[in-house]
Length: 143
Length: 356
Image (cartoon, rainbow over all chains, first blue to last red):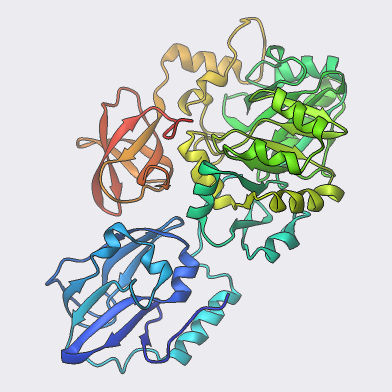
């Protein structure tokens, strides 16, 4: 499966992307690779505005037809905005993971230097494709 | 290495996401499980279910006696062309598998069993069949294609010859016809009208191609699972297994108690459970708030733990979380489900969730 990995974003090993914009605001979503593995998204549980989070802390949950997945904050900070559109349209994450499917914005004083760049994330994604992405695929199926 | 159906290359060509299922490499979806689900509810979808186990019993008379002992439902209810859903029980009344048995008249009986249970099913059936002097043959030379949905029958015009289509149209739900050597049953695992066609493996790819050309969309096992759950159909290994009887699995209706003198495997245990009072029941749950239900979530009535979900999913048709749950009898009309540490309110319903 070929997925898109924009070079202007930073990434976590847990498949979030992060984009640092003005005034220390980081926009967070999940990667194209992750949405491919999860399949159709059907439910998103967003964090409350103002919630203080630390890096690698679970602060949202997305559920696909297949499984529930935690969304981890890439940085220390506070949640200042969430993508309310996802509540009624979780499929935006499948359709446009780096655009309309963004999940939350976090105000931080940190930099993104500790996160993966596109090349490093791609290496992880390729490895997972090869071993059939154990953690994200699950499921007992009808048969 | 995982087994492959004759349609494996077709799945790859259609861009399927393949997963291991019961030792078979099967399509999970071809892009969007949700779209495939809606396709079956609104039009027609095509499933490769060639992994299913097919066993033929060519001698009708001895097989009838044998199956009346082997199966909890009674094949005496059948007549040529009719199908019957039943459990295969052990002596303790536990469910070894669920299956459909077809009465093929002078050609005998055909059983269609699950794929993941094949080895233990055949190991169970073989010595009993030998005792009854019944011969049987696994039909691993047959594939199985399911065409399901409100437009399924209409799509067959361009696919099968006119005689065969006429015979299928004249048949009813839960019946099968055989025309020019092709076995076609009005059965399925989606709650929709449709057929399950059993071509020879050598003919399966050509049939698959003709069905796709007629506008039936390929659908994976992911959609099959949400479709069967909406239809209130049990999944073996989730909703029942060898540790549960049909009576605590919402399958009491498949047990033929009459005639009272028919001895079948598991009967004594079921009668004992019935006399002592059946302790649990399988209910349907519809989540009242946003979210998704999954299997193995704990179910509460107030502060009291009453059971566990056995199958759960997001229902694409209802746009809600739904589940089957095994709970103690006497549950009220509402309960709570532990979803990742939160107690969410669910309405108790009698399946099917989506009535057709």
